[in-house]
Length: 155
Image (cartoon, rainbow, N blue to C red; front, top):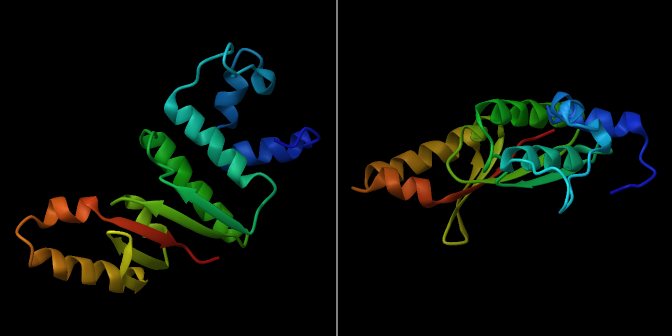
């Protein structure tokens, strides 16, 4: 959304999001019209372009809401790598997810039930607490899947 964005910064963000090669394969590369009358992108492609936009400019705080919702396995892998690269660059990444493998990237987890924090702390402690509560519930697997997690990987 920065009309004066240096090409290098845009390409760097796309590379971090793992979408640079896909963009280059579009009919006009980075100049391809993807607006209402332009090329239609898949949900996963749009999701990854959104990730590149979030990574543009090396922000210190990145908030991602369901960033893996439309991603295939390759896209989810690229997302995990992008989150780790952002962390290594000093960013704090907050991820709002349902039950997801992305939780393994977190140092700190806030587990939400009906909009309230039910558990907060290290990933290991919170996951253990969730599992203890789940074993007491006959419908544990379905219940755990419906709850939200706010995942905060440390820089």
